[in-house]
Image (cartoon, rainbow, N blue to C red; front, side, top):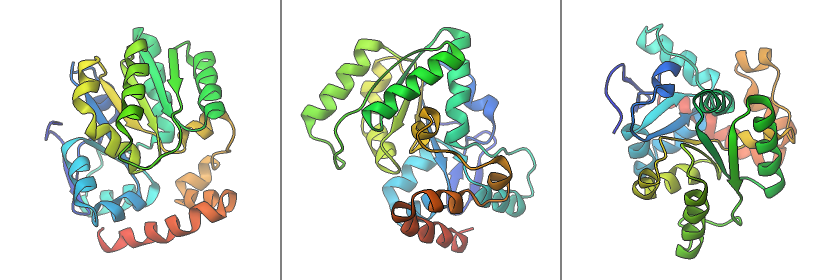
Length: 240
């Protein structure tokens, strides 16, 4: 379980992943990193299992709205906005610097392959990946076994899971012990981040991110997928 040092209570949840240096530090333990945006806050307040996973691990403030609200509510200035879309790059750089292997799990096969190629080219990181067929959680035992076998063959230290939230968090939580036994030290749920890394989906410009309008940017790109999710995200305000 994550340490309580620097923990922040916000929106009925416990946030321990408040600083990059704490997340990147190798404590010789497995860190499950959950990047928590407004939509996840709303879901976690309805789903006790998701709330437990957030509270027991390394939750970060992902998204401008939760980040600003948490700073205003707490009065703290030592917390950082840490989104999966940014932090996967930082994990890649850290892994390359220390000679650690990285594994990308999920997304479409072409997206996974292109994301690996781009991270390998940019950072020189030793990287592999696997895209299982799209399925609902919990996965069949045969699918779980194949995923774990593929990871075991490569023996990475960093595992990036792109099943979409909260499926990726549920899967990681259900397999923490076998993943720990394989020597993995960082796990992060990346959602659609591999699409950004692969270049198949453009990320919002920085000024739009800082204005807290990235959700609207993604709505414009993926209206059918994002409309209901944006409505759920607005509901986070009742918990903030």
